[in-house]
Image (cartoon, rainbow, N blue to C red; front, top):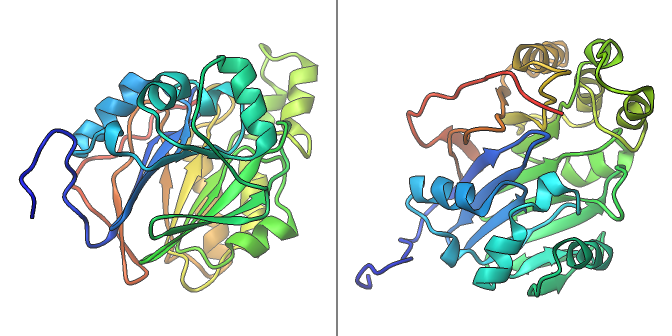
Length: 292
Protein backbone atom coordinates (compact mmCIF):
# COMPACT_ATOMS: atom_id res chain seq x y z
CA UNK A 1 0.00 0.00 0.00
CA UNK A 2 1.44 3.44 -0.87
CA UNK A 3 2.30 5.86 1.90
CA UNK A 4 -0.64 8.13 2.79
CA UNK A 5 -0.51 11.67 1.52
CA UNK A 6 -2.93 14.60 1.36
CA UNK A 7 -6.02 13.45 -0.43
CA UNK A 8 -5.07 9.76 -0.33
CA UNK A 9 -8.07 7.43 0.00
CA UNK A 10 -7.59 3.88 1.14
CA UNK A 11 -9.58 1.60 -1.17
CA UNK A 12 -12.84 0.17 0.15
CA UNK A 13 -13.87 -3.42 -0.38
CA UNK A 14 -17.58 -2.61 -0.34
CA UNK A 15 -19.81 0.15 -1.60
CA UNK A 16 -20.60 3.08 0.69
CA UNK A 17 -23.43 5.57 0.18
CA UNK A 18 -24.07 8.70 2.23
CA UNK A 19 -26.81 11.29 1.77
CA UNK A 20 -24.97 14.48 2.74
CA UNK A 21 -28.10 16.68 2.68
CA UNK A 22 -31.56 16.55 1.17
CA UNK A 23 -34.29 19.15 1.25
CA UNK A 24 -35.52 22.12 -0.70
CA UNK A 25 -32.57 24.12 0.61
CA UNK A 26 -29.99 21.78 -0.90
CA UNK A 27 -29.22 18.25 -2.03
CA UNK A 28 -26.05 16.19 -2.29
CA UNK A 29 -25.05 12.54 -1.84
CA UNK A 30 -21.72 10.70 -1.89
CA UNK A 31 -21.15 7.25 -3.39
CA UNK A 32 -17.92 5.30 -3.13
CA UNK A 33 -17.11 1.98 -4.76
CA UNK A 34 -13.77 0.16 -4.78
CA UNK A 35 -12.73 2.15 -7.89
CA UNK A 36 -14.85 5.31 -8.00
CA UNK A 37 -15.93 8.24 -5.82
CA UNK A 38 -18.75 10.51 -6.98
CA UNK A 39 -21.21 13.11 -5.78
CA UNK A 40 -24.81 12.99 -6.92
CA UNK A 41 -25.93 16.61 -7.11
CA UNK A 42 -24.06 19.51 -5.54
CA UNK A 43 -26.74 21.73 -4.05
CA UNK A 44 -25.06 22.72 -0.80
CA UNK A 45 -21.99 24.90 -0.34
CA UNK A 46 -18.56 23.59 -1.25
CA UNK A 47 -17.55 24.25 2.36
CA UNK A 48 -20.30 21.98 3.69
CA UNK A 49 -19.43 19.28 1.18
CA UNK A 50 -15.76 19.43 2.14
CA UNK A 51 -16.63 19.23 5.84
CA UNK A 52 -18.99 16.31 5.27
CA UNK A 53 -16.41 14.43 3.22
CA UNK A 54 -13.70 15.10 5.80
CA UNK A 55 -16.00 13.56 8.41
CA UNK A 56 -15.89 10.45 6.21
CA UNK A 57 -12.07 10.72 5.96
CA UNK A 58 -12.43 11.73 2.33
CA UNK A 59 -11.59 14.89 0.36
CA UNK A 60 -13.29 16.52 -2.64
CA UNK A 61 -9.95 16.59 -4.48
CA UNK A 62 -10.26 12.84 -4.99
CA UNK A 63 -13.74 12.87 -6.50
CA UNK A 64 -13.97 11.19 -9.90
CA UNK A 65 -17.09 13.07 -10.93
CA UNK A 66 -20.26 14.92 -9.98
CA UNK A 67 -23.57 13.67 -11.39
CA UNK A 68 -26.23 16.36 -11.84
CA UNK A 69 -29.95 15.57 -12.05
CA UNK A 70 -31.02 19.07 -13.14
CA UNK A 71 -30.11 22.75 -12.99
CA UNK A 72 -32.21 24.08 -10.09
CA UNK A 73 -30.18 25.89 -7.44
CA UNK A 74 -30.80 23.35 -4.68
CA UNK A 75 -28.93 20.83 -6.85
CA UNK A 76 -26.04 22.92 -8.24
CA UNK A 77 -25.37 25.82 -5.82
CA UNK A 78 -21.97 24.45 -4.75
CA UNK A 79 -20.89 23.39 -8.22
CA UNK A 80 -18.96 26.50 -9.27
CA UNK A 81 -16.65 26.55 -6.27
CA UNK A 82 -16.22 22.80 -6.07
CA UNK A 83 -16.14 21.52 -9.65
CA UNK A 84 -14.82 24.52 -11.58
CA UNK A 85 -12.10 25.29 -9.05
CA UNK A 86 -10.93 21.70 -8.64
CA UNK A 87 -11.54 20.57 -12.21
CA UNK A 88 -13.86 17.74 -11.20
CA UNK A 89 -15.75 16.26 -14.18
CA UNK A 90 -19.46 17.08 -14.24
CA UNK A 91 -21.79 14.49 -15.76
CA UNK A 92 -25.11 15.79 -17.11
CA UNK A 93 -27.02 16.16 -20.36
CA UNK A 94 -26.39 18.94 -22.87
CA UNK A 95 -29.41 21.08 -21.97
CA UNK A 96 -28.55 20.99 -18.27
CA UNK A 97 -24.92 21.87 -19.04
CA UNK A 98 -26.02 24.90 -21.05
CA UNK A 99 -28.15 26.12 -18.15
CA UNK A 100 -25.34 25.56 -15.65
CA UNK A 101 -22.98 27.62 -17.82
CA UNK A 102 -25.56 30.40 -18.04
CA UNK A 103 -26.21 30.39 -14.28
CA UNK A 104 -22.63 30.06 -13.03
CA UNK A 105 -20.59 31.66 -15.85
CA UNK A 106 -17.60 29.40 -15.20
CA UNK A 107 -15.53 26.79 -17.01
CA UNK A 108 -16.57 23.24 -16.20
CA UNK A 109 -15.23 19.90 -17.37
CA UNK A 110 -18.57 18.66 -18.67
CA UNK A 111 -18.95 15.01 -19.65
CA UNK A 112 -22.16 15.10 -21.65
CA UNK A 113 -24.63 12.26 -21.41
CA UNK A 114 -27.75 11.81 -23.49
CA UNK A 115 -30.78 11.23 -21.29
CA UNK A 116 -31.72 7.57 -21.50
CA UNK A 117 -28.18 6.34 -22.06
CA UNK A 118 -25.74 4.60 -19.72
CA UNK A 119 -22.23 5.74 -18.82
CA UNK A 120 -19.39 4.43 -16.67
CA UNK A 121 -17.10 5.94 -14.05
CA UNK A 122 -14.61 3.29 -13.02
CA UNK A 123 -16.59 0.31 -11.76
CA UNK A 124 -19.81 2.35 -11.48
CA UNK A 125 -22.42 2.03 -14.24
CA UNK A 126 -25.04 4.78 -14.35
CA UNK A 127 -28.35 4.38 -16.14
CA UNK A 128 -30.09 7.69 -16.87
CA UNK A 129 -33.75 8.29 -17.61
CA UNK A 130 -36.13 11.25 -17.86
CA UNK A 131 -38.20 12.27 -14.85
CA UNK A 132 -41.25 14.58 -14.87
CA UNK A 133 -40.17 17.89 -13.30
CA UNK A 134 -40.24 21.52 -14.36
CA UNK A 135 -36.55 21.73 -15.24
CA UNK A 136 -35.06 21.88 -18.73
CA UNK A 137 -34.14 18.16 -19.03
CA UNK A 138 -34.17 16.47 -15.60
CA UNK A 139 -32.76 12.98 -15.10
CA UNK A 140 -33.00 10.21 -12.56
CA UNK A 141 -30.25 7.65 -11.99
CA UNK A 142 -29.98 3.92 -11.43
CA UNK A 143 -26.52 3.40 -9.97
CA UNK A 144 -25.16 -0.08 -10.64
CA UNK A 145 -22.26 -0.80 -8.28
CA UNK A 146 -20.26 -4.00 -7.85
CA UNK A 147 -22.25 -4.76 -4.67
CA UNK A 148 -25.78 -3.56 -5.40
CA UNK A 149 -28.04 -1.01 -7.02
CA UNK A 150 -29.23 2.42 -5.88
CA UNK A 151 -32.21 4.20 -7.43
CA UNK A 152 -31.99 7.98 -7.21
CA UNK A 153 -35.35 9.74 -7.68
CA UNK A 154 -35.82 13.30 -6.54
CA UNK A 155 -37.79 16.29 -7.83
CA UNK A 156 -40.49 14.59 -9.85
CA UNK A 157 -44.16 15.41 -10.11
CA UNK A 158 -45.45 11.87 -10.49
CA UNK A 159 -44.22 8.34 -10.86
CA UNK A 160 -44.13 6.98 -14.40
CA UNK A 161 -43.95 3.45 -15.76
CA UNK A 162 -40.62 4.27 -17.39
CA UNK A 163 -39.10 5.41 -14.10
CA UNK A 164 -40.46 2.35 -12.30
CA UNK A 165 -39.01 0.06 -14.94
CA UNK A 166 -35.57 1.66 -14.63
CA UNK A 167 -35.25 1.42 -10.82
CA UNK A 168 -37.39 -1.61 -10.06
CA UNK A 169 -34.48 -3.84 -8.97
CA UNK A 170 -32.79 -1.37 -6.60
CA UNK A 171 -31.70 -2.55 -3.15
CA UNK A 172 -31.58 1.09 -2.02
CA UNK A 173 -34.03 3.74 -3.18
CA UNK A 174 -33.91 7.50 -2.64
CA UNK A 175 -37.46 8.72 -3.25
CA UNK A 176 -38.89 12.23 -3.04
CA UNK A 177 -41.53 12.77 -0.33
CA UNK A 178 -41.73 16.53 -0.66
CA UNK A 179 -44.97 17.58 0.97
CA UNK A 180 -48.18 16.69 2.72
CA UNK A 181 -51.01 17.79 0.41
CA UNK A 182 -53.20 19.18 3.21
CA UNK A 183 -50.33 21.17 4.72
CA UNK A 184 -49.46 22.58 1.32
CA UNK A 185 -53.04 23.54 0.46
CA UNK A 186 -53.49 25.24 3.84
CA UNK A 187 -50.15 27.08 3.83
CA UNK A 188 -50.98 30.81 3.92
CA UNK A 189 -47.49 31.89 2.77
CA UNK A 190 -47.50 30.26 -0.64
CA UNK A 191 -49.45 31.84 -3.52
CA UNK A 192 -51.89 29.61 -5.35
CA UNK A 193 -49.71 29.67 -8.47
CA UNK A 194 -46.80 28.12 -6.53
CA UNK A 195 -49.07 25.51 -4.98
CA UNK A 196 -50.31 24.58 -8.44
CA UNK A 197 -46.72 24.21 -9.69
CA UNK A 198 -45.75 21.98 -6.77
CA UNK A 199 -48.89 19.84 -7.11
CA UNK A 200 -48.64 19.52 -10.90
CA UNK A 201 -47.49 16.41 -12.73
CA UNK A 202 -44.16 18.19 -13.30
CA UNK A 203 -43.83 19.51 -9.75
CA UNK A 204 -42.93 17.55 -6.63
CA UNK A 205 -43.99 14.17 -5.31
CA UNK A 206 -46.16 14.24 -2.18
CA UNK A 207 -46.01 11.71 0.65
CA UNK A 208 -49.16 10.09 -0.70
CA UNK A 209 -47.89 10.14 -4.28
CA UNK A 210 -44.62 8.49 -3.24
CA UNK A 211 -46.52 5.84 -1.29
CA UNK A 212 -48.71 5.07 -4.28
CA UNK A 213 -45.66 4.85 -6.53
CA UNK A 214 -44.20 2.19 -4.24
CA UNK A 215 -46.80 -0.21 -5.60
CA UNK A 216 -44.64 -0.31 -8.75
CA UNK A 217 -41.28 -0.31 -6.96
CA UNK A 218 -41.43 -2.83 -4.11
CA UNK A 219 -39.66 -6.15 -4.69
CA UNK A 220 -38.10 -8.79 -2.41
CA UNK A 221 -34.55 -7.39 -2.67
CA UNK A 222 -35.47 -3.79 -1.73
CA UNK A 223 -33.92 -3.09 1.67
CA UNK A 224 -33.68 0.64 2.34
CA UNK A 225 -35.74 3.69 1.34
CA UNK A 226 -34.73 7.30 1.90
CA UNK A 227 -37.59 9.79 2.18
CA UNK A 228 -35.96 12.77 0.46
CA UNK A 229 -36.41 16.45 -0.41
CA UNK A 230 -38.91 17.25 2.37
CA UNK A 231 -40.51 20.68 2.53
CA UNK A 232 -39.72 22.58 5.71
CA UNK A 233 -43.14 24.20 6.04
CA UNK A 234 -45.37 21.68 4.24
CA UNK A 235 -44.15 18.37 5.60
CA UNK A 236 -42.68 16.72 8.68
CA UNK A 237 -40.38 13.71 9.03
CA UNK A 238 -43.07 11.88 11.00
CA UNK A 239 -45.69 12.37 8.28
CA UNK A 240 -43.35 11.21 5.52
CA UNK A 241 -42.07 8.22 7.48
CA UNK A 242 -45.55 7.13 8.56
CA UNK A 243 -46.97 7.33 5.03
CA UNK A 244 -44.16 5.27 3.50
CA UNK A 245 -43.88 2.79 6.38
CA UNK A 246 -47.64 2.19 6.40
CA UNK A 247 -47.73 1.61 2.66
CA UNK A 248 -44.83 -0.82 2.84
CA UNK A 249 -46.73 -2.79 5.46
CA UNK A 250 -49.80 -2.91 3.27
CA UNK A 251 -47.65 -4.16 0.40
CA UNK A 252 -46.17 -6.91 2.55
CA UNK A 253 -42.79 -5.18 2.59
CA UNK A 254 -42.39 -4.15 6.24
CA UNK A 255 -38.88 -5.64 6.02
CA UNK A 256 -37.76 -2.47 4.18
CA UNK A 257 -36.02 0.10 6.38
CA UNK A 258 -37.30 3.69 6.03
CA UNK A 259 -35.05 6.67 6.76
CA UNK A 260 -35.93 10.36 6.53
CA UNK A 261 -33.17 12.61 5.20
CA UNK A 262 -32.24 16.00 6.63
CA UNK A 263 -31.21 19.22 4.87
CA UNK A 264 -28.82 20.09 7.68
CA UNK A 265 -26.77 16.99 8.41
CA UNK A 266 -25.69 13.77 6.70
CA UNK A 267 -27.45 10.48 7.15
CA UNK A 268 -25.57 7.45 8.38
CA UNK A 269 -23.40 5.82 5.78
CA UNK A 270 -24.89 2.70 4.23
CA UNK A 271 -22.61 -0.14 3.24
CA UNK A 272 -23.58 -2.46 0.39
CA UNK A 273 -21.88 -5.83 0.19
CA UNK A 274 -23.19 -8.78 -1.79
CA UNK A 275 -26.46 -6.90 -2.32
CA UNK A 276 -26.92 -6.67 1.47
CA UNK A 277 -27.32 -3.27 3.10
CA UNK A 278 -26.12 -2.24 6.57
CA UNK A 279 -25.27 0.95 8.43
CA UNK A 280 -21.55 1.70 8.63
CA UNK A 281 -21.46 3.95 11.72
CA UNK A 282 -23.12 4.29 15.10
CA UNK A 283 -23.90 7.95 14.43
CA UNK A 284 -27.40 8.95 15.59
CA UNK A 285 -29.63 10.16 12.78
CA UNK A 286 -31.76 13.16 13.66
CA UNK A 287 -35.10 13.74 11.97
CA UNK A 288 -35.81 17.44 12.41
CA UNK A 289 -38.56 19.36 10.66
CA UNK A 290 -37.57 19.94 7.04
CA UNK A 291 -38.16 22.43 3.94
CA UNK A 292 -39.62 24.11 0.59
